[in-house]
Amino acid sequence: MSNKVSFDFTGVSVLVTGGTSGIGYAISSAFADAGASVTVTGTRASAADYDTELSRFAYKQLEMRDGDAVDALAASLGSLDVLVNNAGANFPDGLDEWSPEGFQASLAMNVEGAQRLSVRAREALAKSTMPGGASVVNVISMMTYRATTIVPGYSSSKAALLALTRNLALHWVNDGIRVNAVAPGLIDTPMTAPMKPFQEMLDGELAKQIMRRMGTPEEVAAAVLFLSSEASSFTTGTAFAIDGGYLAL
Image (cartoon, rainbow, N blue to C red; front, side):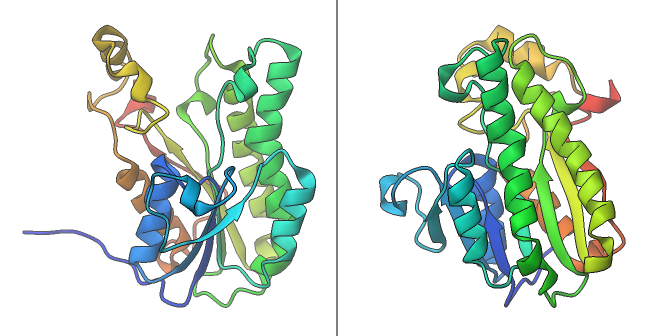
């Protein structure tokens, strides 16, 4: 027996920031598997500079804190059906996020760049004829909802990105653009890989959720495709938690 869901995004144009690895790569791959034309961004000069196989995507170099580069990318779009604001990181430039410099750098990387790209891409998104309307999906975090003593800038930026999601959903409803977010829990990606050799640390994190396992990037990607599809045409301004029950405890 199988209850697998498939989507058809043939003819749909998709832009995924930070689509070269982890959750972003899984999202990009899922859209490509469903027939979409996918562009991914990364910070390196070319797709060939990554170990990941990126030949099925168009590639654009982009530093999210470079406003001119963000503007140039948005101006080149023409029309766009789906924007996934996935790019982000903690400890930008190795800075302590409790320092004013580290905190500001985290905000710039994780929310200001997404806001700038979304606003600059509004005209392209408004041209979409995709059933259910154009879609923006912001990737937030469980740190949106829970405090942290390690990366307060990252946590604050993701909370701000949720607020931005709701505000854009309201602001753009008459443009036929839906705006939602996904909130991953502990997902097995290169970002979380450093904790895996430390079983006590990993077990401590898993104890905070119901399912007691790490999620996969593909499980996050499935939610993004749903939120971008006609199946969710009455859904906007919300956040979909893929967290193994983290928020339930």
